[in-house]
Length: 136
Ligand code: ATP
Image (cartoon, rainbow, N blue to C red; front, side):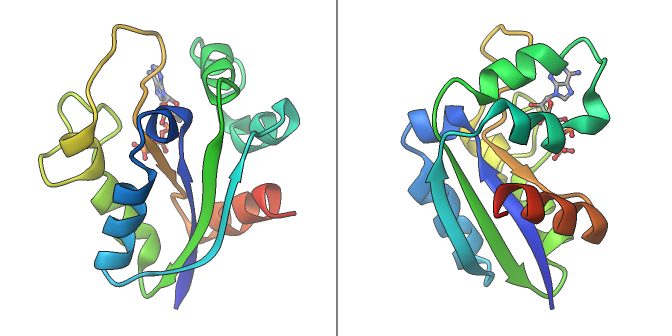
């Protein structure tokens, strides 16, 4: 088995999509083993997004993530990292495939940040690192 960090970003929480998003994760057969609604600190976000420090979208991204509560969760199951990323769809919601969370529920809003509803860890190493940041 494997685990991944899932975030429902502020756009997903504000639009009332948390339940639908978590339901898709459960419907695919993964188990939620941690779940918390929280307003992250800048420290958490700077650690979480450390690979993007210095990129033009870094500060807008941090500001967006500070704009309202997020839901942090740990999902578990065989190959859940790939499985959740497949469920989430491509980064850009406008063109993410229908059937995915981003493709079905997201679009562009004419802003600098891609408001794309969810985050999922991209490797087992990232998952353990990120779970340690959000569920310290
Ligand atoms: P994916 O799951 O598609 O890889 P991600 O969340 O892992 O998405 P990252 O490349 O780690 O994507 O980027 C983190 C976040 O930063 C994205 O989810 C998105 O909100 C934002 N982002 C990434 N690239 C851009 C960009 N070029 N312009 C604006 N925002 C961006």
